[in-house]
Amino acid sequence: MGRLAVEKAKQVHRRHPGLGFPLDMERLAGAEGCECLSWPFVGPVREVKRDYFIGLAQGLGEREKRCLIAHALAHHLMHTGNQLSFQGWQKGSVSRQEQQADECSAHILMPEDELKKVECLPVWEIAEHFGVLEDVARRRLTEFATDSELRRWRRKDEKGKSP
Image 1 (spheres, rainbow, N blue to C red):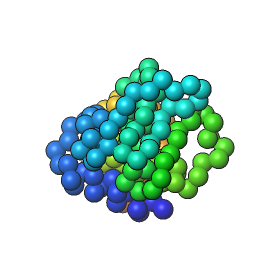
Image 2: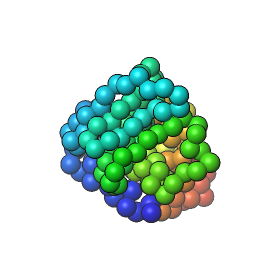
Image 3: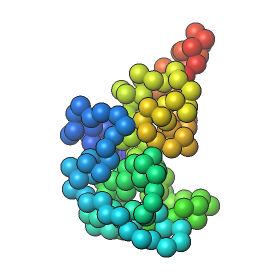
Image 4: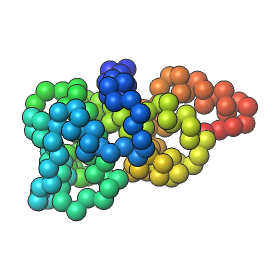
């Protein structure tokens, strides 16, 4: 599962070289053919991806908005059909597609080359650098780390320079 998600994220960065961080996800989504819309969702719905439209709940903070757009863009790149994102509701029933979108979006937001520059910082500072939620940064550094990153971090750990 991980290789496809990481490769899709790398393809985005190859198509759009020279992106600054934190990413302007609305602009990037637009460049990938999507349109972001603010919508007065009710209840737990935070984001909906339908066709080329990404609907976002009103009143989101910039970091959450950036992460939700990246998640919807990952679905756009990897999956067919429409997807919904519910705050808290899906935690117990995360599907394979949701896991893939989480991983791909984490790599879109925090690509390996840029992560190398800040990987020795505490998680909260890494999240600050990329303008993402701390949970997204933590998952990117743990369950979504690539094999090459894990090898590099182990070598640094052995030398006493833990990321």
